Image 1 (cartoon, rainbow, N blue to C red):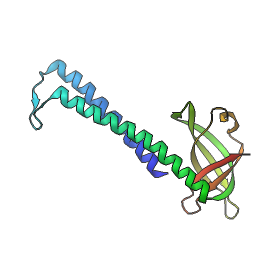
Image 2 (spheres, helix red, strand yellow):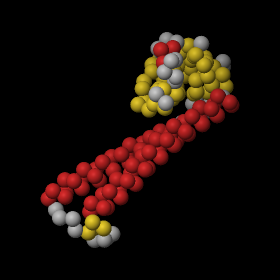
Image 3 (cartoon, rainbow, N blue to C red):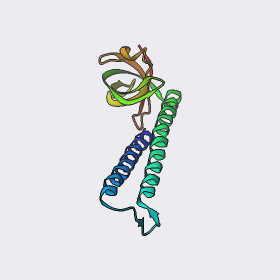
Image 4 (cartoon, one colour):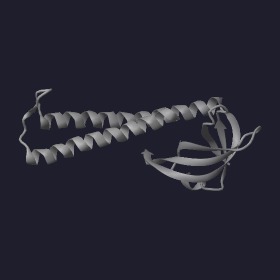
Length: 157
């Protein structure tokens, strides 16, 4: 689950860099003329547009990549993880939706068949028709990796 989070962080950084580049250029253009930047021999406005465009492309690719990698990691856990029950402690919105279905961050207390319970967080694409069925106190079936304690929801009980 580290790669999707890293990609979302990269997307956020790209959004900030692109925004600063565009808005900084607008502010600077009010006070300075558009002389070429000495190193690249490009006018400042063109350089700002190039930086903003590259930042936007990196941001978009990072967001799409994080969703794809997250889904692939969850599917891998569902195939090879150990089964356990878990109690939902909380549900948060990640701000990501796919086909109007939210990706939720679900805080869980996992009860493995052997060993003590542990806390975990799963990020899952939830059908908007099932959003109400995953709420604090509900028991769900999960698959988990005993080494990393990463968790993926299997189904709602």
